[in-house]
Image (cartoon, rainbow over all chains, first blue to last red):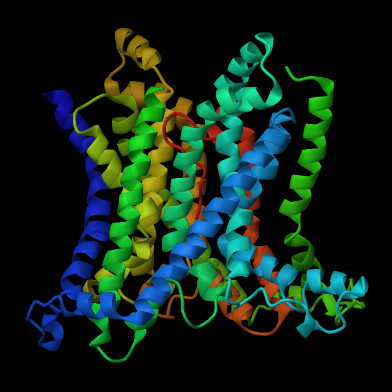
Length: 283
Length: 276
């Protein structure tokens, strides 16, 4: 009994902070998305904002863009991370930790600014292309910022997230996977067989868990697309923010409805991740 | 382990990865000290200290913004450790029912963007007079930082067996004395790193600060953001370098004080080292 009270007391401050500042904020977002805003005399509950949002072409465009940016960033990062981890598995543990931890720790904004200075039409890449005679003027270099394909955004995310996934993969490569692979080698398995039948099954739960985090994060992140994305369509969090800043108070429920949808989608990913992490912890 | 050829390949791989990691910093450092750098020159034709003097200008906005960022970040770090440590003890040190649900609840603000909840709570903050104040900004920064701190400290406490405390208790120490003299010194490096990460999370916040601070609370990322949306790469790069410094410092500390196994993932919670 005493133990249970002790645990409750230990957890209380953190649960209080998350409950009051986060959960109640989400609850308020739900309430406002239903049009309930007594401050401006709106006390009627309606699903109008959701109907507007879900039948609106703008929302669909933003939703598809968000899925595309998060999906492409996650997919490219995952593949490159596995390749990088496999390539670096025998290198110095300390050096690879430094190289991989740096982009993880550097703020997204710094990464976005640095990548922009590399890939913009007057950036380092364009200057090299001009020096090699491939282009004559900046405008001849492909537009990779504020562009249709969100290349600058995706590159920034890839730079930030590859090391994150790679560290997860490296940890399991240097642990159990390495030992099992040695056994497989002794038993005569070739390099491909060792990877596909031994190493990959061991590292894949970690890869999936890390990819889920990256997807959820890039789905809900604001700064990088706000800085490097074009003005229409925008990713969902930017769309929610723009609606929120609209002077028309009627736009408020729409902003909140988008927020609620973002929260629901990312919460599903959180639940999936936790299920996986639990299995990982046991294994 | 590993044959020599695998080792050589790995070192080549390391050089390539290191070069890609360093790539965005190359134009940042050159622009920060560039005087004139026209297209298509590969190097600036003139160097200047304009970026540096902008940063150091005592009448400029950088000094105040840096101070704001440092003060808010330090308060967030202290509060996050104070709030996250007991939670880490409960989650890492003990087994109990419904732990999975509590972990889900604590993890939620890491994966569900705090921007959504902050827009929802904004109205309440306005009513309580917390909007447009540093206190309000401090409070919303806790939303992403407390969960991270709790999760990092969970793994720190999960590593421990509690045998030393038991020995101290057997020798007559009170549970409070055992905590202060045995537990705390042992977890101190982990706690310091958790605090540093909490600081970094606060330091990196842009949109939460803008939303709740309403432009009244100016922090470094707001200067960087408006510079980056403008047309002066010299100022933007100088600000970006200053903005990146604490991350580099934190990295050095983390690599120095934590065992490799504690800086990378594992132990069930993949994503520990992730700072957004």
